[in-house]
Length: 358
Ligand SMILES: C[S@@+](CC[C@H](N)C(=O)[O-])C[C@H]1O[C@@H](n2cnc3c(N)ncnc32)[C@H](O)[C@@H]1O
Image 1 (cartoon, rainbow, N blue to C red):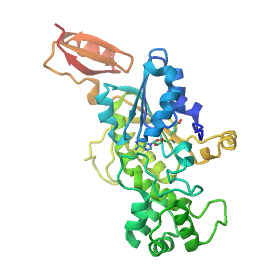
Image 2 (spheres, rainbow, N blue to C red):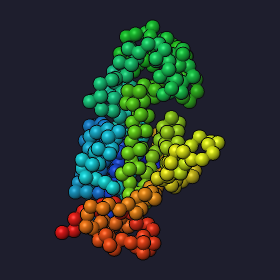
Image 3 (cartoon, rainbow, N blue to C red):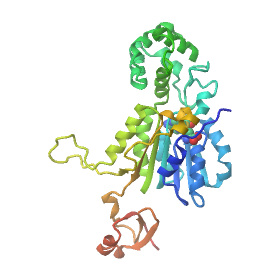
């Protein structure tokens, strides 16, 4: 079976600031390499919720993480439903959330999945067999215009307008090698380091799995799930993903996002994150030598900050409140104890839960 080597492993665990007793979500479990390293550092007392859309990944990770089984919950689902999944398993708030985007070596190298232009297989490319749309549906069903746009938008392929008509004229295309030959007929055989089919395959995979849309949706949910002080870490592998992550973190670490030149803020946006690494983290030369697939990896990390309104939100109904002391635990206090003296002494406290004491 192909082996997946986790990318930027030490850097990821450090960026997540994994600590014993913490709760972590790995949204892209894969073969469980990052998950195992997180579990190593969060035990005793820690827990990990792992998500993957691919049932084959869940199977591999279940075996790999068997020794941690009491501290792990693995879920076969799409991370676009991150908030819903965490609520269902009562797994929030959390101390860290990881996205290691794209596909694993397991998926790339398994015959029959259709992700690799080096292995002849049906044009599938779905992360999950529950998804309807396959790469074959796109190459055989989209108009020339739609195909050219898709290959340009998701593959940043400059030759998209030469490749699309060739695909249309070569239909039906059934296998990855049918597609590779069609692309080579359109743009010529490999000349440089990059195979001419690379970008078209990337575009189809992104479209089949709605990768960019799912990422945008999940990032917003991730921030909501983090404790103050909790970390969001994202490893991306191409510029389209990285741009989404960069823009998201930039926006969420900015108080006002009004268009430049707006005289007075009208958006009311408040920062919920602070960026941890101003400079993106990339693999060392030795990591790239040992694992060439890591070469395009870029890691970005941010920390959840306490919003002003979260800090002293007082709910009137109950007779006591649980006060979250900046992620270090809860203080149970009666209403009358939470006066100006308390809030002055504990500016880091946020009042997050309330209920009846008796
Ligand atoms: C690069 S691999 C992760 C490898 C993993 N970090 C490890 O150490 O083994 C990415 C994984 O994310 C999964 N994935 C991608 N998009 C997903 C989504 N929207 N929802 C759930 N899983 C997704 C893929 O199926 C794949 O297994």
